[in-house]
Image 1 (cartoon, one colour):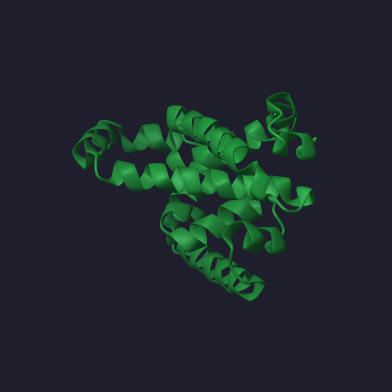
Image 2: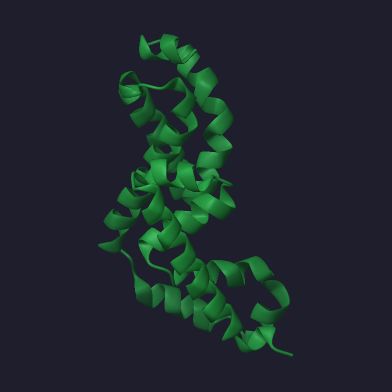
Amino acid sequence: MIKRAQKGDREAFLKIFQPYEGEIYRIAFIYLKNKDDALDVVQETAYRAFKSIISLREPKYFKTWLISIAIRCALDIIRSQKKITLIENYNVVESQVSKQDIDDNIPNSVTIKDLIEKLSLDEKNVIILRFYNSCTIQEVADILNIPLGTAKTILYRALKKLQKEWKGDDVCEQ
């Protein structure tokens, strides 16, 4: 199918792309925290992948290749939004929510997401790929185009930071 897609067959490309749409959406949503932007990333990933599938040398790395395109698309959107982000609006919405509402209605996963937000971009990329997308360390290194040793170092550094933040949180202590 990949060989057919590389020859310009749109139907073949759709057949190989569709099984990964959900995963691409999840990755994009984790980065962007907005379903419309995440859908834009899925669409842009499909476009970029179809346009450049001819450059895919090893069909067995199709998923890894797609995820790396999706991450680049998400990061492109983040970069473009940094110029437009209205922090004041975010703070107003946040201040209207009481502490009790947060404690009662927000699941523990939000706490983990908040902790992840404190990581550097490299650390966040590695954690998201490794634990949210169940990639192996080798796949993480391939997707991010970094050496395996660097991926491991970033992962362990990020885990140490997360552990330190988590243990420092009063909510966990009883």
